[in-house]
Length: 210
Ligand SMILES: Cc1cc2nc3c(=O)[nH]c(=O)nc-3n(C[C@H](O)[C@H](O)[C@H](O)COP(=O)(O)O)c2cc1C
Image (cartoon, rainbow, N blue to C red; front, side, top):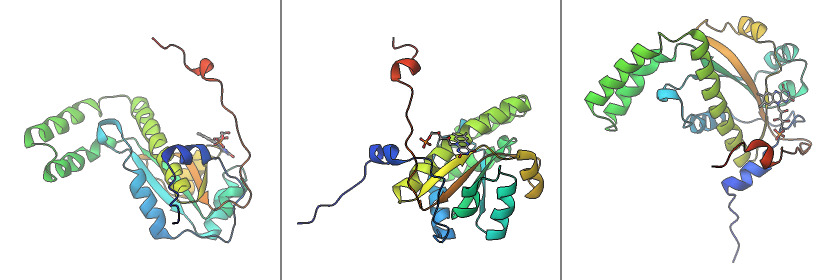
């Protein structure tokens, strides 16, 4: 009898490490990247407004250009794809679509749909842009983490990168003013395993356990 080895979520979490050396000849298909992104978007978000947007960069010349505005980080060029995660400052504009689809799917009744739409349209546009950006950054972090674990589960590797010039990125990729770049995620097959990292001891990070 052959044993079926199934990776648990715990295994995937423990195995994920930031990889910076990729096999430049290994290509992940656009279809598979879309599958991973679709799964990643099952992440939670504030009022389910999903204030994340993605740009998938796989073209070799474009990755070369991107490397120049990302502190010359090698993985930008050698990974199979760079996923730029952008935030939506005007996430409330999606409210109608989000709650109507939940209603049409039979998940909420009409009254609750209208209540959510009304409440969101009252609350979010009145909030300072800074507050909305903070929400988008937080939610983009959740979707990014999911994406990195999903990739690891499929045998791929990633590294999140905040080290890039965000103004230059927005200009080069014609990012609409509604959106803003948050993080780049290199995705590919490791050439060299990542170096290990440690974590602060739990007693340093659990401030209180009441
Ligand atoms: C928001 C964010 C920005 C990061 N920016 C970079 C980066 O620009 N370049 C890089 O090589 N690693 C970057 N990292 C990766 C961290 O250095 C790495 O996650 C950390 O050292 C822990 O290692 P591990 O991911 O292998 O567990 C970033 C991580 C995060 C969460």
